[in-house]
Image 1 (tube, rainbow, N blue to C red):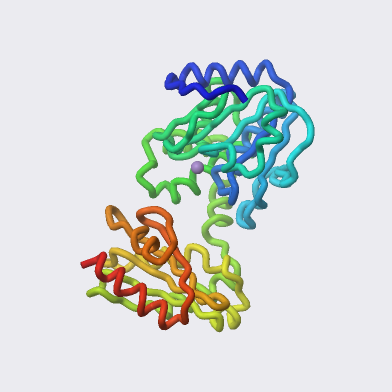
Image 2: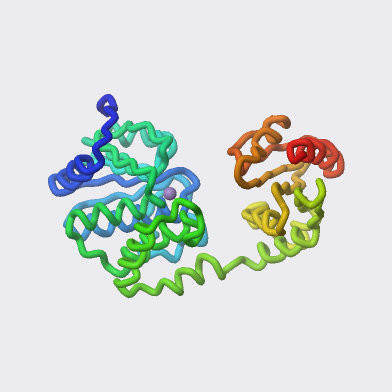
Length: 328
Ligand SMILES: [Mn+2]
């Protein structure tokens, strides 16, 4: 890889990528670890367009595609084993640094050019071409613009992939990154006639029975502290056993804690063998990562976590006072 040069002129970068696509034949596409709807949807859409242009494409995700995205067209083309051949170009999707995609370096050394497409401002501009657009709701929105510039007509299936990227990254057009342009792009995608309602059903109205049972138990455990500003949820090993569930079935459960009016922060205590996993959520300026750090954990201002070697009761007695103090 050449030494990165920070390029700020986005239109020039789009043009350079168009030229690279037209002048190259083999492409390696990769997304980030723990892939989400935006990474996988964007990858599948680019892969499909490149194939229609007669190119050879390898899609790679070191981590498996999550269960809830396996409905996407041609998703089985995404492989978790890195290829051993050369490519004219690599396109990395939302990897702020190449290692966000896993062990990519050996493959990237065999790629003529590296393209970095991202909508996070943390991107390190490591590519030969860098399309980094922090004002974009999603990578899918950037990819749409690329195809639009190239005068590529998007197929129904490609539109379904890009829509999935946009709807998941914006939290169903809910987060502040959703712009008028996001809605315009979504509207253009809908015009292709793909079944967006079916996709929304699969993404948002489908949940494993085990996950529903765990959710029920977590909601049943809700308690309020700090004068109603703190919501506390608890899941014991027995809860998981009785729901026949695994820890991943409790993913996102914590977000329900933020729903009651007046709640400023929420914490979930989840019992594991010999320790307690503690996760935090908050809104706005309230920095729950400070609490996580107190107990050797970390994360972001509004979403963080730690693990405490203690019983459930002890962990709660340690953590809740620290949170209450933050809320005071
Ligand atoms: Mn994204």
